Every structure is written in structure tokens, then in C-alpha cells.
Length: 388
Image (cartoon, rainbow, N blue to C red; front, top):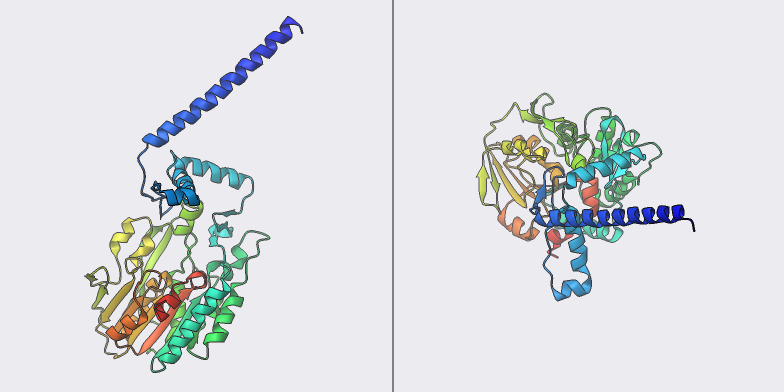
């Protein structure tokens, strides 16, 4: 071997050693920085709680749960996580990615959540529970609103060649089983009729108050409400809303949307909102402090709560019980002029049973109000109704 070749080989080996040492040093520096960086409880940008350092126990170590939790903790608490996440999203987008963390990057600025495939057993258990409840309380006027998700209505906004599960098929199954036991309010037909309007947010999974208002008009017929079409005035409360789908996906974080409320012109607006388990009362259906936070949708009823009792000054003697998810939060204000009392129970957070509620309040009407995705994955409905 010539001297020149030996020198070249030696030089290459030194470069490789330096690269290896540099790589190890970088890992050590990042490890030290990660250790010194304070643990964050939540990410405002992602609008979620971050994983915290798990406690090691023999059981968790042997089962492997500890390592899974620790890996999740490291991923959530990594130094400059938002920066590296932005880099990853940029590379994904450059490579043609159309989906991030279960969210499709749609057309015209829309972010669309994937459609949930319901677990058949869980769905049937929930349907049986609702049907049983309606039949057991035949003296009550029971109705249901199942709102399709944006991806099922705004199919033309999905990325090219993306075809999702047909949520309408599952909703038809729900209607077929329950329509003989309760009044079905066809939200799907209403939303499809108005799909060219802003009935869903672009950066959030909720319907807008305009979408809720259109469905309320349909519900008023079924619920026999003395509704006047021009009885509400729309007021915007913020124009800087950026929703949970933007936070979840990392896209459209600079998009600003409008949130508004519909205020009834008729009836006295005085009411008392009692957050039962929090032992807190207010005189408004809206929490303006939420407009200062990232998730401004919480302006409606302050967000989700296990049990809320709304007492109005309506001359009606009707009292309404609502089983709900967060879609109901912007819908309830349309109902307050027509019911003396409205009680909302969110099965995801309520730990009691329906008997506890039925023994405390006297109802004339019951309404189940859910978005499709939440209804098809919520396994708490049966637990509240049957106490299981």
C-alpha cells in the first residue's frame, strides 16, 4: 500500500472518529438540556396536557407499562419540542403528506377529523340503554339529535383520492333502531342542505353556531316550540379562534376564525347556571374568560362539565334533560326561552347514575345530543343510564 493511500485512509478514519465523537457529544448535550429543562404540564400550542414523568414500581416495570409511559414522557418533554415538531410537519408536507395525527389537511383551509369506526358491541350496548330508558320513561317526550361530523358532510373538502368510512350508514342504523322509541331530529339532512355555508369551523371539530341554529330550527318543529324565525340576533365575540384540529395536527395555526352567539330577542334573559359538582353559579351561559385562552370554544358554558342545572324565567312549565357532548354547549342557548329548567349531563365526566338525576329533578322532556364521532366511541352512556 502506498504512503499516499495510507495517509488518505488515516485521514478518513480520523474524520469518522470526529463525526462519531461529535454525534455522541450532541446526544449528551441534548440529554443534559432535557434533564435541566423544566417539565411542562401542558402545551398551549397543542391544546393538551403533556405526559408527566411516571413513577417506577415493580408492577409497572415488569408489565412494560413504565417504559411505555417514560417514552411518552420523553417525547412530550423534549427540548424545543415545538420547533422540532414544526420541522417534522414541514418535511411531511413537502413529501406530500395529507394527514397528520388523525387530521386531514383539506381544501380551502379546512382541517377534517377522520371518521370513527364504531365498536359494534359498544354501540349496541349504548343503543339498548337509550331504547330502554325511553321505554321506561314513556311519560317523557324523548328526542335525539345526532350531528354528522364535518368530514362526512364536506366530502369535497377532503384531499384528492381520500375516501373515508361512510358515517351516514352508521347513523342510519341508529335511527332505524331508535326511531320507534323516540323522536328523531334529522340533523344530517339539515347540515347537508347548508353545507355551502360556514356550518363547521375550519380549524376545529365542532359545528359553528350557524350550523347549530339551522338544526335548532328543525328541532323546534319536533319539540313543538313556539319558535319565531327572526327571534335571534347574532353577535361575534371573537375573531381570533384557532381550534383543536389545528393544535392536534400542527397545521393552520395562524388561521383566525370567528365565534359568535345568537341572542334571543324575546323573553327575559335572566337565568341561573348552576355547575352542580363544582358548586359554582353564574348568571350567564357564556364564560368570557375563555376568550383569553387558546380553546375559545369554551366560551359556551365554560367548556365541559359533568352536571349543569340551568334555571330560566320562561313561562313554560317544561323541564328538559339533555345527555350531551360538547356539541350541545352552543346549542343550549337556543332552548332557554322555551324551558323553565334545563339540566345537562355529560356521561364522559358524570360519575353518578341517571336515577340520581331523575330523583332530584322533574322532567317533561329528554334530548340526546351528540356529534357522530363522539357518540360512536363514547362507552359511558350505558354506564350512566344503567349504572354499570
